[in-house]
Image (cartoon, rainbow, N blue to C red):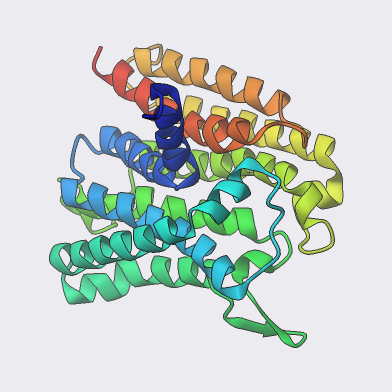
Length: 302
């Protein structure tokens, strides 16, 4: 019997979500928002590089777990899918790694590569690979208490807000002599957004990371962590309003698009709890970032 359409669609959807391709779309979404502020200055090649490098680094984390033979809680949909698709992830990691290296060497000059790309790559690899000897075992940056979500936010902002400044058509911006106020606000807004919307993933992992690594929900409790995420989200909204104040028309379509998105994000945060299904986090929370870019892009074309 031929498989029905629904299982095929389900398998494709699971691959996009659990295979980290949605993460690549999130990276492209962040770049799109920066590109709006820079008036379409970011080259397509850089979009491609960040897209494939994001998928590579998230896939690499899974592959490292395979080789370390760590004990996984395979009862969750995500972990069960990853365990069933080890070979697929190994091939995906090799493919995205090849593409990312090719784009890096083709797009950047050697000095640029050393100064710009490698710092972010080094932090990302140290995040995924066990490079630090602590108490007789090797651990990753993500295993240090409270560090994980701040590292994630810092690397995303570096790659999607800071480096794009170098592509600006305005010489003083491209040389970083001047950082536009709206880009500065966007950088801080994005940092707070990523921290706020990564806290729910730590809430999701509470049953599996208890006693292994200290996280904000693990110390504060998931309800207090949820309140902290809401506070960070509100602070990010204030930065969006502040950045929007530099526009010639304060009440423009982009402002209302941002308000709509922040309402959606707040609703998702309020619905967060440790018993939520995997799709709520892996698709819903990550998908929020893609939605933000789509809303702002749509508003920018009005």
